[in-house]
Amino acid sequence: MDRAATEHGQQADAEIQLRRAIEKKERLEQECESQLKELEKRFAAENLEFERFELKPRKADVQIDRVALVWLPWRIDAAGRAEPVY
Image (cartoon, rainbow, N blue to C red; front, side, top):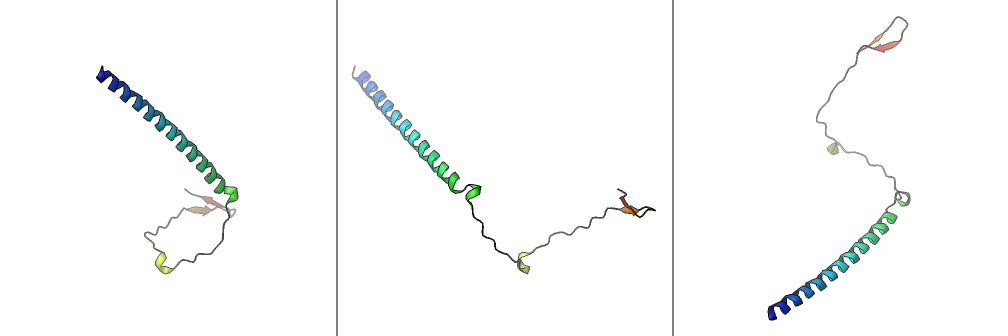
């Protein structure tokens, strides 16, 4: 009897904890949704302001790894028009 009562009490405590956890989860989800909506409004494309500035590269910022030359053959016909030969 005593064991059954203890198990029943533990089950009741577990159900209370479960309900509290579910309520907390729902509050957190609502808070998250609210914050996301606020951020979407704040960072909407139509609300963004851009500041233009010129950035000049320095020699130390430029690095060339590979140089490639591509050639596509063209020919000029008797009428002087260029046409691709590839």
